[in-house]
Image: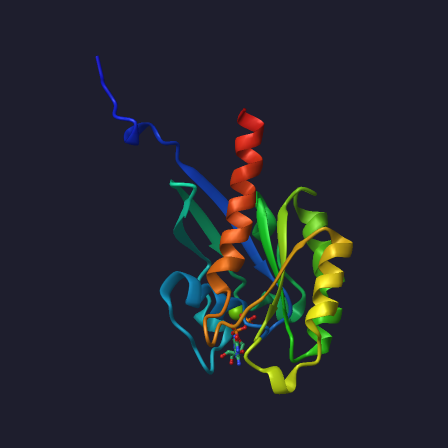
Length: 184
Ligand code: GDP
Ligand code: MG
């Protein structure tokens, strides 16, 4: 007969989360900052790892996020369906200092919905908030788009770390909450 302490009975959660958005918006650096607290000033797409598993504490439970990063395929708009397969969360990233990357968000959302479950928990991320002088997309515009699309919204800076952990935590916490509601 085996006896388990309450601690040992905790379930193990593993959520696949994908990073998408135009090239050079800072996807790889958001992951590098979140998972390793690193930043690459002149990063090339080659620094990208396929995915990185990160432990998070959600309501005292250990939850693992398997965060996928593109290896630069987005330059050719050639992110494969395998990349999206099984994803339960997504960070859709643009660069607040390049409007063109914000204009692409609709296409990225279409692609996400084509390849994954409609219910994938999604946050719209306006990265490079440290570049205030070069800002081309206002916070209000980002917020409005997120509201219209039913997404969470946050502005981040992988450079100065602002809101980076929050962006990932928001997605993971919501996925966790949805699953807990289903169980009850
Ligand atoms: P990806 O192609 O979306 O993965 O973008 P990268 O993470 O490779 O970043 C592209 C470039 O933007 C690199 O030169 C980064 O150093 C820079 N970068 C990424 N995040 C930030 C940020 O928050 N602020 C600033 N100023 N630069 C950033
Ligand atoms: Mg990258």
